[in-house]
Amino acid sequence: MNFFNLSSPNKFQKFSKRIYPWVSYGSIMFLFIGLFFSFFKSPPDYLQGESVRIMYIHVPAAWLSLQIYVVMAICSFVSLVYRHSLADIISRSCAPIGATFTFITLITGSIWGKPTWGAWWVWDARLTSELILFFIYIGHMIVSNSYEDYRKGDKNAAILTLVGIVNLPIIKWSVDWWNTLHQPASIMKLDTPSIDSEMLTPLFFMAISFFLIFLSIMLTRISTEIMVRKIEIIKSNF
Amino acid sequence: MKAKNKRLMIIISLLATFFLGCILLFLNLRENLIYFYSPTEINESKTTKTEKIRVGGMVSKGSVKRELIMRDNEKLEKINFEITDFENSVQVNYIGILPDLFKEEQGVVVEGIFKNQIFLASKVLAKHDENYMPPEIKKMQLLKDNNDGS
Image (cartoon, rainbow over all chains, first blue to last red; front, top):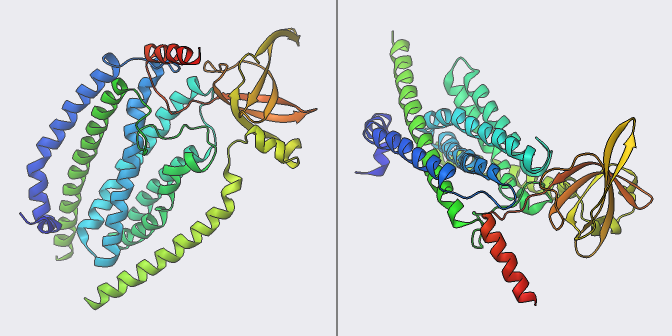
């Protein structure tokens, strides 16, 4: 199978139909394994106690909030340069999912912050830049839907996405560049992870599960969007 | 094909200009985005000392002193402690409830003003570091450290 064939919406739709059951059932399976480990097979933290378990939702959601943006940025670039309709469709399908995972990150972080730091919210660089990411996602959704001609919305939303990339390195390295209340990375760093292996297992399963949840929602949204556009084309021919 | 390459060049050059601008802006703003200062930075700069600022560091071992005071017919706890970055330290005074994770030799960020060389905190936030481990392993680590020390 030629990978580039997938850039044709019809072939993509066939391919996504084939992998969808694996992705969706896989996400549910890993979610159960992950939740089981998070609640029953992992120890409390020496300082945070039981509230460390919030991390098993917070961290995978935060990773996804960045990964989804990278997918959207690549698609926006392809869309602006090569005018490829599938790239627009993927971008449009990803934005609400990214916004949701960013929202989950912010909310779970806030719930963790109150017992740990003693504050629901602080305006440090990490928290503020993640909030900006949330606004960019919302902005993308508003811009892409605010034109009668959806192609115009796609184009302007793609420009917004490319401009917003600046925020990604700021989120990732804010904890190293500035004094922030948020702790620096425990896993995504060059050193060995500064997190116990027993806590790494649930995090690993939850991360896989969240990624598969993202994929399955994305695939559904993409095939819906392809069908919507086909209907639009048929309508405009009458 | 030609139009495609033209778009590619335009977008790449626009993005490059934009990101260069952002980097310049960012390098200039960098100093202003700090959430808290360390005691050493406080010692070096005298200008910020009258404004409301945040100071962060470790709570020095054995420096926490608590006393009960009466104010407006309410019993309040007054806490004295020292924040250090192992070079300089700041004396802090705080009246109120401390977060659960406030402990000696743990990270803390305090918000408030300086008065007569003493920092009057209006807010105390516990800072958590990037280390996550079960209590047993922390105990073992402490034992090991003690054995190495003796």
